[in-house]
Length: 178
Image (cartoon, one colour):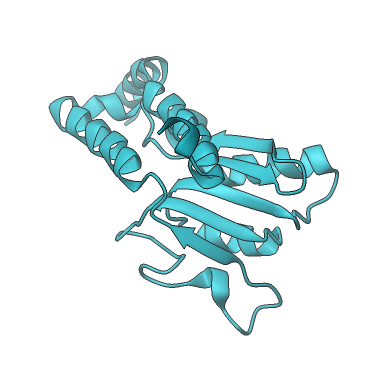
């Protein structure tokens, strides 16, 4: 791609790096970055950590929103764009709207929980006090390839969806349960 790379591709590549971190930790490879539009600076990064944190809310988007809000010093992220490797779920789409992000760019659609247009579109509900501009399909093939690689590996070794350290501790914990 080189010099022909668009800004959306540049930032989605950074989100893909976050997704690779999730993959390396045995998590479903979803990554996210938030960019301050005026400066082009990445002000929040996140990757999926649900298994590592043992927390339903440890999605890439939630982590990135928390970091960006801390950086800005406000919960409102107006003037910012969120880049995500997979279409946001209902929880994350709601958080994106509540954070007042200007724009959401995602790589791959999610036919399981996509709420930026695939199953529902929570980012553009007219009754809400804020709507989020949406673009999709940026580096879609790269994102889908990483997700396919993860699930192919998972089918070969069903226990690999957890990091090695948490897998061994969960085996010991479940052995002690009645």
